[in-house]
Image 1 (cartoon, rainbow, N blue to C red):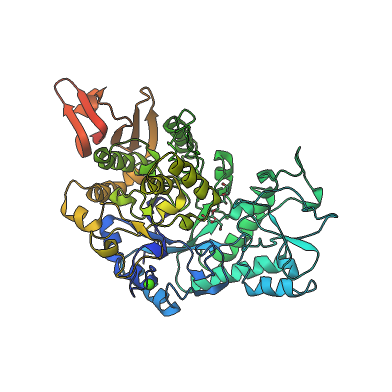
Image 2 (image 1 turned 45 degrees about the vertical axis):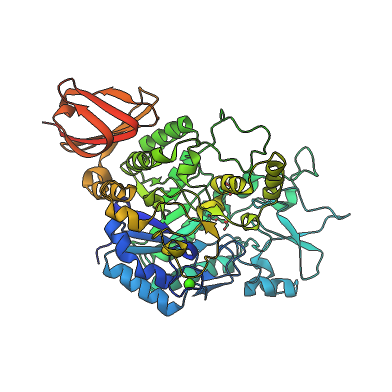
Length: 564
Ligand code: TEU
Ligand code: CA
């Protein structure tokens, strides 16, 4: 089978628990994925990324791994996995797995052994600090999931262990050569089972500053994120390179997608340095910020109200990354993932009837740029947040506060839950909507995450030539042309309401026009463009005589021209 080059990849992100349930226990599974591969092939996908599938107590939906060498029984068996890999490859597609390398579950045998005895061989697999006097914490660093990064040794010693995420997810000590070796072995094990690469979870956090610096900020009692001590330290890149090199030794052309949430452009470039053995591409969260000018309901907490995407910031950042990374590496192109609300929910106040046009415009805008599309499941339908049925599903304290505040104002519980779902990552993890049947065609059983589906679904959109789904197919078919893979990119930023860029390869040129606003826009077309061939359009009209292009609300047009 011909291996894809990184720029040719079109990735589809599957949250396995939520995609397709094959045995009707309410949890999506590997056989469910296998049964839907033709859907992905028809869409134009060539690479699947599965969120974690290893054995896990599911405190963080699989990001807390208990056994790296087995599939979680709720998702299937190793035989199911091998079958999936075979069926993926038979369709000329590839598959990458989420690789959780910064931490394990507290149920992992290493951690259980480590806490059983301070002299355990596995003690040094994790990070420990002695307890300061008088019940203080070793320092005031905050965990990403709330509370301190420090948790008392459940084994009863006076020490604390370090956890950046949930307390059930202790961080590994990457200084320890045995840890590094063990992680390489796990990677090699899965490569031998046919996987084509990995998405490296939170790799930027593997290196930590010395804890005994005891870095207290102004108010020692105040817990604070202290990323300068545990994110993107130079040593993390050394660990990364050693790890990837150990995998490339077995499979030279494997694909590595690094999750580098807080990486800026310089870091992203350095993690994808083509002269070293590093990532092919990284996912940064820096494309997306909240609009600082958004007007919130002052009577309700901001938590729980959907946050508006800052389009101005997005435009600037994206253009900068696109421009600087040319001839270096392929950036990831994405709108949503399992850690963020779905993109349509970040366009607050857009009318439901305008959402399909918005979804189409966003697809053309993002994925025809230079880089690797990563499409989050359901996005291709124009899916928005499913309304979660149970406030406890969010797993956050602030949810109760938000509900109480809203109910006091006389708001309906259903509306408050909708608002919470649209603003929270859990609202983006509801089941894939295959049909308008029972449980959206996901399962005969009530899904693990109970939510009310939205109208968008595969069955409906398949039949409708104007659907978001069919538009995605067209975008991805275009994306496969060398022009949209290798071509250079330049932007025209004159009009703040528009996103316009030109791809160029040899004599071939395509201009992508996108209307970022709900207002109709008139654009003067360059002379050469008037003779161009329309490759794709929505809510767009060309008046060749007057060399004008009209884009209605969220309209988009792709025009191919040949330079003679
Ligand atoms: O997320 C990691 C992640 O987003 C952090 O590394 C980030 O640096 C931090 O939140 C500051 O912005 C990944 C997964 O995507 C997520 O679902 C998991 O919960 C997490 O790792 C823990 O494994
Ligand atoms: Ca199942």
